[in-house]
Amino acid sequence: MKAVKFIAPIFALGVAFTGVAHAEATMDAAKADETTTKVRQVSYSCNKGGAVKVTYGFNKQKLPTYAEAHLGGKTRFLPINLAHSDVAGTSFGDENSWTISGGAMTLGNYHESDVLIMDPNSEIQYKHCKVVGTKKIKG
Image (cartoon, rainbow, N blue to C red; front, side):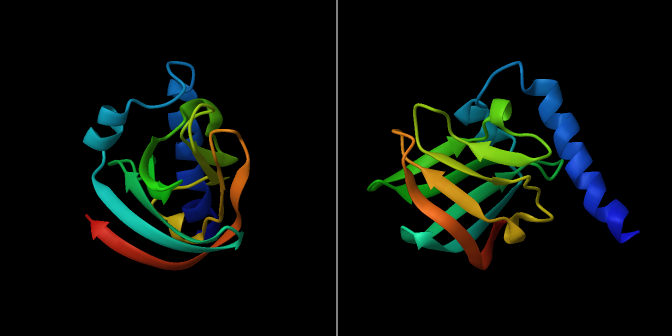
């Protein structure tokens, strides 16, 4: 039963991303914000780059819609990158902006997902980021 509870959301994540991954690479920012029903903030401690807080939005299907973080001196709103997200991992932003990537994320496991953050030049700014705390913002 535990395996089903773990596998079902991951399978749903893959099916959801597969269906729309070819439609557009990065979800439109307005759509990402509009479809969000739950918001969670995660505090990370990183081996490279220090500490960073990332706020994630999730839709009714408990799938991520965006990530928001203070990076490079500005608050960055990074919609999910559907072309680079699947059952193996989730990516926010695109190759022309900051990117946050990690394991396949859902509302059920966001608090367990480590991340890597790269700047627009694809240089790693935050590496080996481990969750140190979470906060429920909305929903």
